[in-house]
Every structure is written in C-alpha cells, then in structure tokens.
Image (tube, rainbow, N blue to C red; front, side):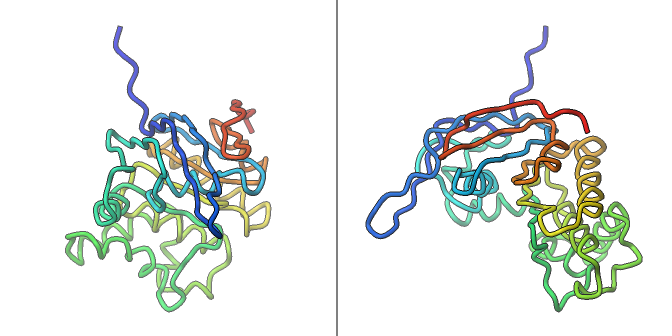
Length: 235
C-alpha cells in the first residue's frame, strides 16, 4: 500500500504575539493544521479570532513568533525577508476583498504586474496574461481601467492576477465581501473551478456561511485556537 501524500501545508505549534503598548497580545496559541494539495479550506471565526493573522502567516506576509509553517516542504518561518519575498512571488497568489487593483493600469497591466518580477520576455508575459484573462472570461475587457469595470469584473481581474504566476497556493481574504449575492456566487464558482479543474489549493477567510459552504473544509477559530472543523454540506 502506498503512503499518503504529505500535506501541502503543515503547521505545528504556531504562535503569533503582537507587542502593543508594552504588552504582549497573543493572537495564535500553539495552532496545528494540515492542508492537503488541491484542498479548498474556509477559515471562520469572530473578529479577533486570528483567522486573518493565520492567513497572512500562511501567505508569508507576516512572520510567526514561534512554531513551524511548512509549505511544500519549505519551513517559511525560517526564511529571511528577502527569501520570503522571493518565495511569495513564486508560490502564492492573492485575492483580496477590495481587489487591490492599480487604478492607473488597465486590466491587462494589473494582471501582468506580478510577472515583471520574473525573468520572462514581453511575449511570454503577454501570452500568460492572455491565458488567464481568457480563463476568467475577461478578454474583451483587457484594455479597460478598474473604474470602467463592475465589482465582479474587478474581482475576476484580481483572480487572474493571482493565477498568472501559476502558483499552487491561493489565499483569499473575504473575496466576496464587497460583492452582491449573485456576483459573489459567480466568483465562488470560478474559485471552485480553480480547485476542481486546475488542482489549485485555496485557503479563504470569510464571515459568510454561504461562501464557506463552497469550501471542502471549514475550520473555526476562537481566540487563536482551532475549536472546530466540519465538512461543509454540498451546495
């Protein structure tokens, strides 16, 4: 019998403490979590539960106080700032609630931005951007600026930007929080397709039970501790 594949994300004893006003404020307290490759996990919990902090640590945006965060065999908690920036650029795609698009750039140029850090020719960059814009069905909006796009279209541009470097891991912070219900469903359908069709791994923070129900795993945090994990009902 073959051994089970190791998890893409393996977190052990994760601690995050912030220093404020001369006091240590604990946010995560010895958290353990595994996430398999190709999984779609939703993190839920009240404000201050540590879910956004956990997402930022997984994405390499923030540094842990203690513990390990192994992603595809690399303990990113041990990387220096420069190494971490290089690792992020090569391995993680980001989707934010408010899109974080550059208003002076077209949809095409916004998607192209992460590729400017890679040793690619202009032709290779353009080919990749064309591919992901087609994937999110925005080829006809490539030359439009963010203020010429609807909220749903802007979020699809953001998803294309997250995909353009071909990362295995995508982190999403309230990706439907600024969208109406119907548009949010379109975005969630697209994200589910990234997992099912492209084998991407998604870790998503959300307050919306309907968004969380689209994930394959639902993890609840309370005061920096994983308190519950359930299998979401099929939508």
